[in-house]
Image (cartoon, rainbow, N blue to C red; front, top):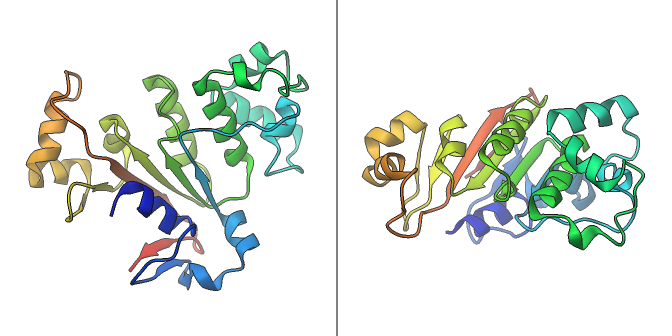
Length: 223
């Protein structure tokens, strides 16, 4: 099973051939689609920006968010330069959406989900166009978000090192553990860690990094 299949299963975008994916102890297929989409958000690598203003884009999933929450999100995720470059929150993106950089588009999508009511957030290479500092800021913001389970799919080891638990996808036998545990248990992971800052000798396997900040009613399990 590859990372795209896993993300689709966790996000309820496809059903498993065997086994059950549960949210809060309830199989995903037993949850109404509208409720499921409200509770679980998937942010892909190719971020979507809708026609309209920047404000409308940010509030797309949370139209009732108050100005204070919006301002806090912009500051927390480092979105202020994007707002300034756009010409303010009420600037139209209808004509210039294609001129936004990939990183700017990703930040808009990330902020949109941060403001949303989603309690499970799946980042599928959703920070790939951000620099290391911006990526760390975004991941920390979501990890500290109340009652949120954060799952990150990334090829950067820095994301894995910050996570509570890591799933290393390589071949047919995924490995699960903390950063320190995988350094001891997996020669491949240890090799990636040693050579991460240097030139890669080949394709790097995807790393799934679940960061758990769970409330009493929130949880995702794959069984």
